[in-house]
Image (tube, rainbow, N blue to C red):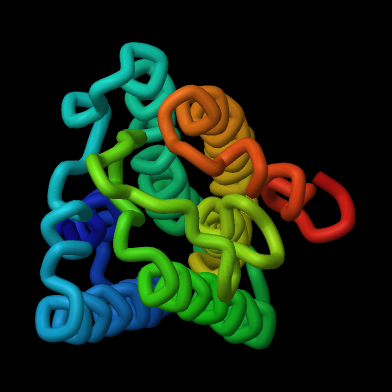
Length: 211
């Protein structure tokens, strides 16, 4: 995964002299490695659930389509950043890059807290035998804190990579996430006992006080 990220950044940029990409890659890699090591020791079942990723792993046809679109937009976000760097150089001041990396780190930290709160946080939309509704931690604030965390670092990523044009696929990716969660909720209401009651208790899907 991290190797693919490096290729999507540095091949389109056609240079390794892209410190913003290096900083982003190191931050992402450190988060991925530390999270994997933590949960491999404390919750290996969660890590097994996170292994099946991508459109092909989704059991629902609707989610296969959504994930296929999301995968293209995710790659485009990094490829566009690399191309813009090659053609125009960095388009965002260094201070703004640093602030954006801090927001990315906050999104990744929230993802870690979601994993701690809910061992059933799979990479695909599915309901397992014995799965229960989690309403504590981040799930007491919004119903989909994992997606909220993802959108936070999606929207910060273009600025962290000094590429305003990468904001276009990042915004489209965020919209795709919103579509995914609406479709996922339909499935959870049908298949996960207690989810309807949880929706009555925690009213907001993604943004506290708004939606």
